[in-house]
Length: 114
Length: 355
Image (tube, rainbow over all chains, first blue to last red; front, side, top):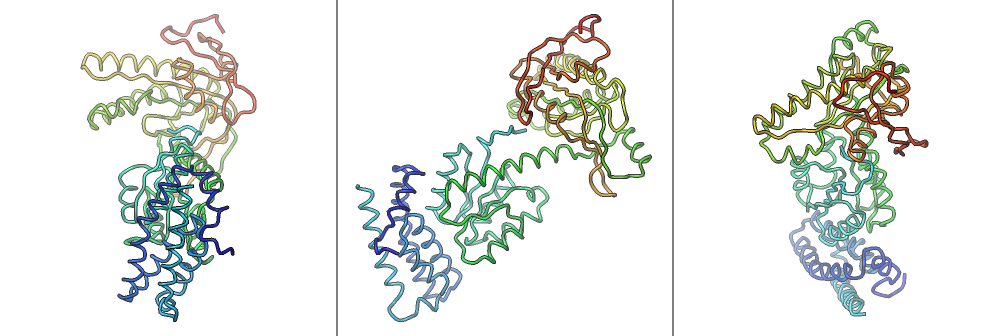
């Protein structure tokens, strides 16, 4: 897997099938919705709510992969499969996830401008 | 009854994630489908019980009610159990896919959904639904003296047989706007009168109504009991139906109520007829090319602007003369060869000497 925040082939394919204007709107929607998913992950973790945690990770994974944010998608998938315990592992996986998201958000904004 | 072209088919997209909902909606709208969305299973079920949909695109991971629970509810619902469902999910694990299929899902697509694959699966699902709807319309309960007798004599054997006969399809033109423009009780009353008149005309000429659906009906002449002049019988019945509608319209006009027009298609030939179902409850069904042609001819009456259309086989089978108008060959879906189509002239008693 490349280290690019966004896999260009996936992204270009999305643009080709759904239309560039629409994809720009979709990016805006994702950037608006994603903070709530992180909020969900954190509060589910605090409340020990495994189902909600899994669902939020699942949502983030699904959207990441849609835009070609494969690294973010993979990290979210690990949390979806690993559940609450995986978020408590050393190295603060949620924090790493948030950092990767920041990279993805910047890259998506850049792609929108391009 | 919806035609084979799937444009305008109604799809319900259920997904708790907004990006997914928007993207799926976009992909479906590019296929000219009519899309409605719901954000969880509970909302989706409410919508499904309120309005008619042709297809459900279902996510699994959702709050309140997940996709598995929706599938379980659908199986138990007689009205909804035949609704095709395509699961779109990024759930991990083959066991989840298997569970969806076991719960009755038609198909499973991994997210992010590949639009080309989505299009193919949706086309296949809608086509299957169309065929299933058609079959359901064929398998309608009906009870006429002839059929009851035939069932008695055949010892309720459920097997089919090849028969030669004529099939008629008839429906009310522009019925939906009419039904929407008046109170529901009036619509039902109108349908009841219409059906009574049509039943009488059909059974008066030896035919049986084998199905009714909404404002449409299908009748068979020559099965279950053979009818040597089934072509004449069907055409005579059709002429009488038109005549009855004209009388009915005169009454309606006098009462200041809406009038109706009907289109009738008749085709003749070989078909498979028989009882399908269980020993407790059987329905009489006719299947085959002839049925298809009759249905298409009925649809074609709008385009041809004729009240009654018959195919070349029916024309060749007429022993009595009817006033016919050759409309030339028409291409019909599902038929390799074009079908010769004739309009039956209405408003004159069956004349002699022109065939």
